Image (cartoon, rainbow, N blue to C red; front, side, top):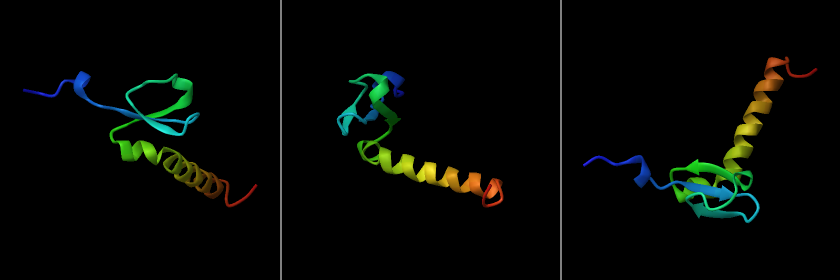
Length: 67
């Protein structure tokens, strides 16, 4: 018996309430995700900040370290 995509649980981080939701319970404009685990969703803001910082570093390197 194979796992059906309808049986997969997804987690979302709600940026308005700062809570993790099991499944999409709120409007998309308030959600980050989906994430595979509750723990990944709990770290959504931290993960986004790390990615943004990394992209900023890449941009600076591409520009030669400054303008």
